[in-house]
Length: 159
Image 1: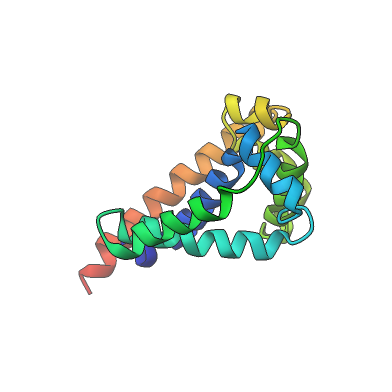
Image 2 (image 1 turned 45 degrees about the vertical axis):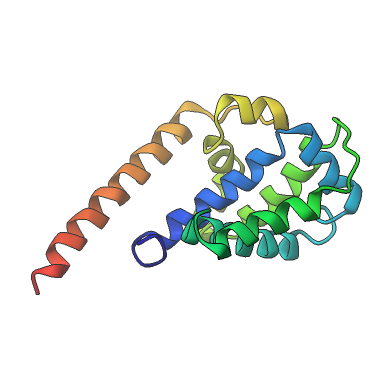
């Protein structure tokens, strides 16, 4: 269902989850030390996305999901971790997220990305809270989108 009904939602959720991982100092340090996210942002996101999709779509009760989790753990196991790197990585992935916004929204890009972060993630990545109108507008837009999707789904099946 995720791949067919909610591909945009899944991609956005994985981007946010990816950024959330940077709030964990140990994970942030690995990414910064290897340069995987600051120098090869798109490749790292693509590789991680493939592994995450395997886990989400197959779960951990199927071999593909378990193999993906095993690979993620294997990749991160050898790294010694430090606490001071969560914001540099957030900025690199934020820049990538900004390139995916529709052009008319680009002036609000940073505020929209920040509006998707909850308080713990904002603190960990040193991101300021977005202005209230941006947060409210984003919430209303996503709510309207879900209602439209529901409406189109119901009416699309009757044809």
